[in-house]
Structures are given as C-alpha cells and as structure tokens.
Length: 137
Image (cartoon, rainbow, N blue to C red; front, side, top):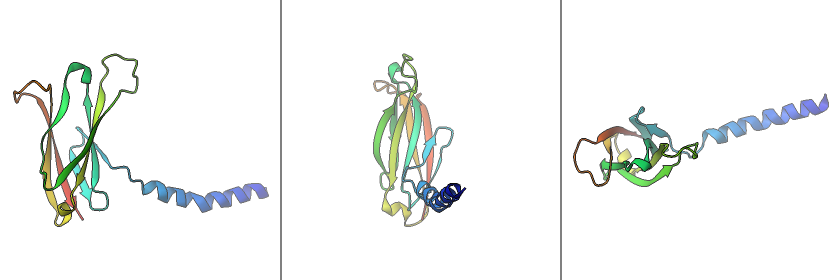
C-alpha cells in the first residue's frame, strides 16, 4: 500500500509538469484546404499548410502569390502516403511559412494562393486554393 501511495504522489507531482511541457510544444499549427483561415500570433509566428498531392501524376502545388513583406516561405517538403506499398497513392505537400516581425506591428490580413498544376501547363484553369492569414500580437 505504501508503494502505491508513493507512486501516486510521484504521479501527481510530475503529471502537471509533463502536461505543461506538452502544451508548450514548438510544433507550428497545421492548416489544410478544409481549414483555410490562419490565425498567427507573435508567440508562434510559424505555421504549416498541408495539401494533398500526387506526384506520380505530374501535378504539384505551386505557390502562386503571397505578400513577401509580411509572410516568408521557410520550406516545402513531400510527405509520402502512410501505405507506401500502394503505387500511385497520394501524399501531402507540406509548406512552412513564417510571419515576419513587421507583420505584428498592427493586426494584418493577407492571402496565400496555391495552384495544383503541372509545371509545363500555363493556363489559369488549375485548381487553386487561397488561405487567409490574420496576424495579431
């Protein structure tokens, strides 16, 4: 019984610390085509955009427009499908952006536009997605 009480005391002592550490994770929030409204604060200036993509078709997401005075692209990568044994299965393109410090001087709104197209196609009939980015202190 004493062992159980000691274990319970340790659990109660360290559980709040673990929960606090988990809530302070530096993982940027993820936004998708279904969640196009992005809220960014000065405490967490980075965010991720995750878009479904199938590289085997020749299609890819391209960054069409954004306000370079407020938002900065940090990196782009491709996430393979979970079941990599399926030939031609779709994965995800992951885009990481960071709001520049001047984006927090006052609350601001800007747009980020992507197009899902093949690199050699130039028409504007490509599937496009627009994300609205709102900043606040």
